[in-house]
Length: 241
Image 1 (cartoon, helix red, strand yellow):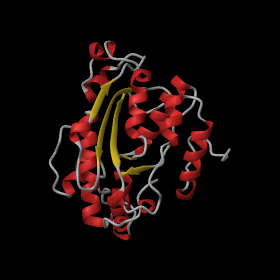
Image 2: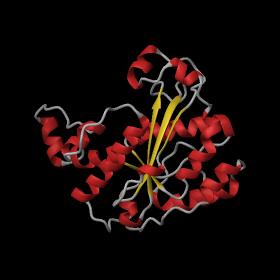
Image 3: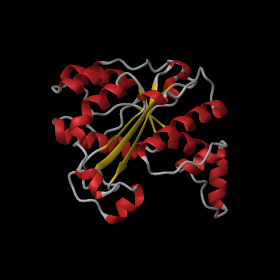
Image 4: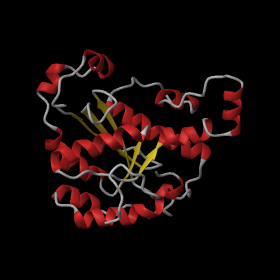
């Protein structure tokens, strides 16, 4: 064992070993296939990396008390967004929807009542993610929610490296000398939410809180971030976490 707890941060140099060991140790067939599918090496230029944007809508923000209600997945590269290969699922959260949750993501009681459990679509989801760098906007939702949900259904969780577009925006607007100076002046921090981040790059304003649309929005945002602040030959290790 690597001695890595499920929620513990894995360093860049550990991801390859972690994934390989999980591939050997996994008992569930779909999870074993996921971990056994190699990811690009950490020094791979981002222009050569196959990616998939992932977004999930949930019933709340606590993975131990709330649940996933929808998942959107959009495969892409720096040059192309593969909309024909997109997938979207509404899944039954196995617990009641709060009215505030319905108002937020507009998924109703009747929709989830007719929706499958996440376990039914899980094999297909993991197949789509396998071998791709997963891109999200705020990994502290997608990573723990997916890990918790899979562990509850298959007895073992799933952790993997991600590129977090919110984290990349934070590097630019929250972690610089200028950002610290703004705070010293008492000015509010620059918003790094998805729509606000897209607006800085001149990207169109999409309706938020729909998993498929937000996945597409995240893919477009990463493309813009790389075009404006990085290079196509930027190594993957400079971007993932």
